[in-house]
Amino acid sequence: MRPAEGQMDSGPAVSRHSKGMTYAVAVLVTILWSSSYVFIKLGLEEVPPLYFAAVRYALAFAILALIDLFSRKSRRTADGNPLKPHSWALLIAGIAGYTVAQGFQYVGLFFLPAVTTSFLLNFTPIFVLLIAVVALNERPSGLQVLGLAIALAGAFLFFYERISWQGEWLGVIVVLASGLGWAAYMVIVRRLQKANVLSSLRLTTLTMGVGVVGMVILSAATGEYAPLTPSLVLVVVWLATVNTALAFFLWNWVLKALPSYELTVIQNLMLIEIAILAFLFLQETITALMVAGMALVLCGVLAVQVRFNRTRGSIV
Image (tube, rainbow, N blue to C red):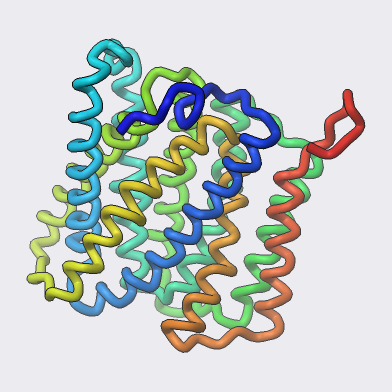
């Protein structure tokens, strides 16, 4: 269903209360995505990575398309026909954000441990910041740049004792490509959201649909597939409905209110979330050095979110 006017599809300007809610939604999405790492690692023991990704995102796209189809009946002229002037942006966003970012992430998780994959994806804020400065003319403050540096330093410290590079270069390249694709997706979607040309629901549906086509093509090219066991079917349904359809819709809504580089640093919270989930469900240990890294990440996230209001002389 389409969000009520003035709520989920409001413009970029938001009140302090609304911005707090926006940050809370962003954190919720990171928790959902962090849980995906556990589900994906377990699922990859049974099915090939690209096939797994294609099934998950195809189901998620079907769910979003169905919701969007029914919502259109009550607002046939709400969005008009905005696709033509933005078709290339939607196409690139779909390929970058889903085929490359999500599909390649599955491949990376197949070759690399989840912690190494997560570490590499923490270079995404650098990609986003550089792209946003050039494409969107977004200028982070000095404090926010410092926050980026602190968060990345914390990410490195967190995984310092667990990084293994020998014989894993293919996985490293694939995951870095995934991070670059996600950075491009966030910048493009941020630009589309600022232009307010599509609802968050339709934007998510269209870009995911494009990405799914790419995933299916890549999966078919590999010729690898496997039947899903009943337990894995349940995992795919959960990933598709909650961790994909709902989470990506919420993330695209958040991109309307927050700069893309802020969101990529909020994503660093996944380091902490994944560590906790890995400890609980994958029996992975947490060292003192990893705890120090998590503390640095938290400091970096807070620094990026804090903005000094020169006119009021207060922190907002």
